[in-house]
Image (cartoon, rainbow, N blue to C red):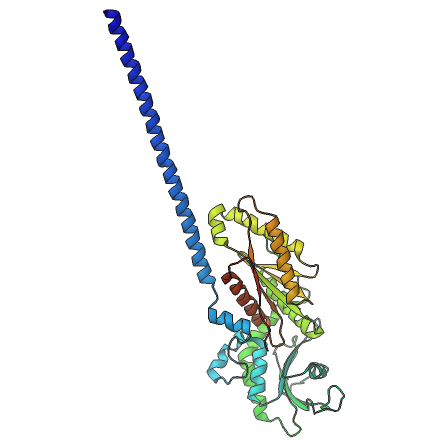
Length: 392
């Protein structure tokens, strides 16, 4: 009897221990399940938060549809020949040198206008409106006149720039100093094809009034064009940085104008960079940007100028190239990115916008057209390139 009692006792203890063991296993499983559920919820929350941040970032950076449509069609902004009141002239610096030329031509009822900037170390920069290529070359031969203290100088031409004896070309012009700095000689001139037109004191005053608004901005911009300056590099990507991009764009536009060569601009933006930062962290995302910059250097041509203009945005200047050359560069980069997925991020894509320098474009207009094309590429689903069309 005692032996049976001991046996039952031991059996009860063993059963109790086994029950505790089963309870412990069940409890751990419940806790593990809760941790798994919590981890899944947090992961889904992170993904949704990253998607929301990306959507918000896209909305903030989205170019207005009307502006995109206008830029792509070539009708961005008010017509250059439109009348403006004196109060609106205060916004002239935003429109650049071409807007200055249009106003000078309009206010003096002239047929054309030209601006020449030059110094002892740089080739002259020539900008014109209303001139044919032959007329621009003819006007460019006079260089920057020596005013010798005069407010203005009148010039005359033979009226037949190409020697064909056809209808009269530029007959006369009125030139005033473009800049106040002695080391930056320049000329703003209005030109006429009429043999009857006579420039007057009123025309001189009109040109001086137009210049008084734009001269400070022009002088500030020209001060940045140091001769043989070494462009700065972005420390992360070793590409040219944003200030260098603007200086290089101005330089290449001037060279293209003088030589009559084409110039293309490709603007690139890494798709869903905000989500990428949230998913793999800023440090890892910086590594992705650095590798993309390396790929861009590899696929770009020897004369192409690659720049990082901020965040995940890049720009490439393609001297003596047209839009199709920029599209091919995008396609080479696109193929390279697809062939080389990133360890933490997988395949990363980019979107692109292309603009070719047009006769009436300055640097700002070229950038706006390329950015507008990029906005359309983003709206079309990313991982594609859109080219801004030519104006009629």
